[in-house]
Structures are given as structure tokens and as C-alpha cells.
Length: 491
Image (tube, rainbow, N blue to C red; front, side, top):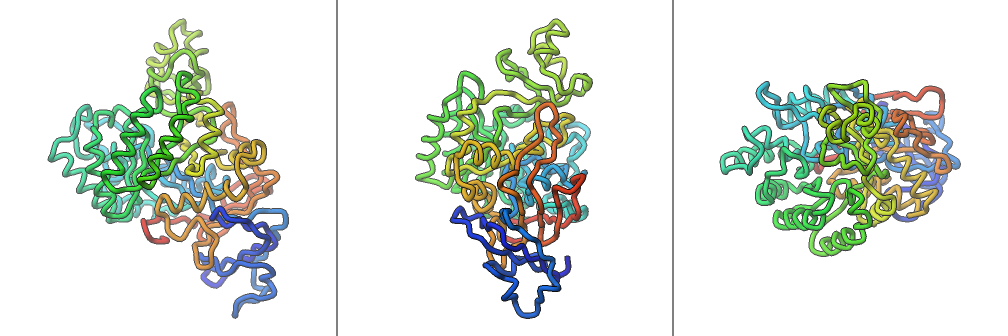
């Protein structure tokens, strides 16, 4: 779209992303910005525009909202490998936040002597600086925008020879310098994944020192807690104290109480998070499912919950099957089967629906998909998380208003992740906009068939360009106009 081209989204229900009341009206886009909002805009167009020159879209019965921001993704590499990003754009997502759970592509180039971080693809680590990663994103121009966090685990790989211990003084200094450079290059903050083996040995003091670097640049700290199971209260205190001591806003990643022994404990965790929020800036993200997904870990295969294999290097033929069925076929225990299937990934049905509902309805909660795009048989959240929030938790369960649902995906996320000029429909902000049918928007991806394109998302504009149009034949991305966003800048 040229700087002078314009689109009039007419007669829709405008839900502006602020959480405030919606209103019937129009949204006028010109170039990559929102030019005007109001009712009856065709009769009072800005000087120099004529209705005959506009692409007019009839939005009667539809919602006009800011493009959705996926607060928690592992899309770092897939935006380079498959820049069409159909799983995300087809949901109405116009910006993805990458580098979560402590794992980012930058700043690390994989040497042959070190093990890969398989969550993002073993051969993906080619960017020694955030500037190099930004240049790679700019070169492919994906269909959506990218806002990057720096992974604590990635910093450890870049600075340490052994990860089963705390960083020493020289190593910590090296990590601080790398992080400082990434933040200067526009990273939005740092993430940690203290639950994972590569970072579990890192003490809170190591993370706090790095978080202070983030604070100096005005970034945020997002964490996959050290435990989401029995020790979750202690892990929440650790995360809160780390962020508070560093003076940095905290985001608790994919908040959950995992494992049957912990079901119902959101009645403890949410009041604690509310208490912490009285002394510091704190938010959460959540995905709208009772199953999580990560690498194969025998400690998570407990013989009680269902575990669905999403990929396996030694046994790819078992992908898409329950580990309990594989174990029965092999005549082994489930943990023994898990060991034989590694390296691999799985969906773990480890949450209770009532806990998911409490978290997703909480006023501090944003929406994130946490999808793993490199899995051969991915969790359905990769394709369906955002429409599922509308279909199940707004329309069916009525846990919040339409305006609150949109806010959890847009304005709240932009504010918490320091994403400038996006997440709100305001004159002058970037023209990331989604048009959807509130009566029909729904996910179609399932655990059996996870590659389902969502329904009800009709048009998606990224930086003013029509990137996706749904509901007419085969779903496809029409244009790639995404950008690498930098902290504090519209990008």
C-alpha cells in the first residue's frame, strides 16, 4: 500500500483495545497509520480524499479491533523460515513477542561443540547479536510484526561452557554486556526459563543482575517460573523478588498450576500475584487450553495424565499418539517409553479447566499462544488460541465482556510489553487492524487435527496492508508487510 492509498472500514462495532465501551462507527486507514475514527466518515473525509478513491469495506455486524498481539510465542525462527506466518495471521495476530522461556535466537551462534536448543530448531542459532537478527527479519519481511525478548538461557549458552552451575563473575559480566547490547538494539526485555535444565542452576542473584540491565533500558522481565507444580508459591516469590529488586516490570509466563496434585491452587496463586502487584508492576499471560506443550521430560510423564507425542527424532512414526498407548505396545512403563522417544516433544494434559478459567478471567491476564511451530504435530494453540478465547470463554462461558477480551489481546499487551503505537485504535497509531465476526469467530484446530484455520476472522491489516482475508476459499496470506519492532518505537 502506498502512502496515499486509503481503506475505509465502515459501519462496524469499534472495539478500540482500551477495555472501554465499544461504539458503532468507521475506521479510516491511510498508508501505515490510522487516519480517522468516527461515525459517517464517508461524508466528512479529510481534505484530499474522495470516496471514489477509497477501498470501502462494509463491516456491518462485524467487530473492528486492533490487531492481536501474541504475548508469548516461540516464533523466533519460523518468521524467517516461513514468513507467511499463516497459523498466526489467520487468527488476527499482527505482532508476535518472541524470545520467551529463556530461549531466543540472539545473541548466540551455535558452535559445533555445544548442544542445540531444540525448541526453536537445532540449526537456527546463527545470529550473534540482536542487530543481526533484526536484519534477518527485515530481509524476509514476514507477514506480521516481531517484538523480541532476549533469553536468559541463550545468554548462558553464549557465555558459559557448563550450564549445571551458577555463572561466575566473568561469565556474568559477559552476559550483562551481551544483554546491554541487545537492549540498546531495541529488544523489549529479557525472559527466563528457570524450569529447564539449562537454566535451573542459575540462582536468583544471577537473574536479578541481568534484570537490572533490562531496567536501565526500560524493558520488561518475563519468566517461565522455576516451578509450576508443588513449589509454585516459592517460585512466584522468587520471580516477584527478582523483578522488584531489579526495578523491572514482571510478566509471569503461561500461568498455570500443573499436575493433578496442584489443581485448584490458583485460589492461592492469584491472590499472591494480586498482593505482589501492590508493590510492583506485574502481569500474566495464559493460553486457553488444559494441556501444555514442551520437550519430552520423564518427570512430567507421571502415568496419571495423558501425554500426546508431538515429535520424536528416534521414532517419528509415533507422532500424534498417546505415550500410554506407545508404552503398552512396547511393553514398557510410560517413563521408559519417554526415554526411548527422546529427543522429542509432547502435549501434557496437566491443568484443570477451573484453574484455566480463573487465570484467563483475571484482570492482570493477557493472551499468548505459546505454540511450538517446529513440532510435527503441534498443540492446537498454535493455530487456534485467540479465536478460542472468543468462542469458549467470551461467547460460551461469558467470563468477560467482548471489550475485555479484546483488551487482553491488544492494549494491555502493548502496554505491558512496551510495544509502542500498537494495541489501540487511535488517530495516528499504526494501522494493525482485524475485522472479525463476533458471532462466528472460533478455533477449528484440535489435538487430533492441529492445523485447522480459524473461522470468523475476515480481514487482517498489518501496517495498513491487507495481509489476510478469510472466509473465501482456501485461506492464504495476501501480503507480507510486517516489521521488526524496537522498544519505544513504532518500527
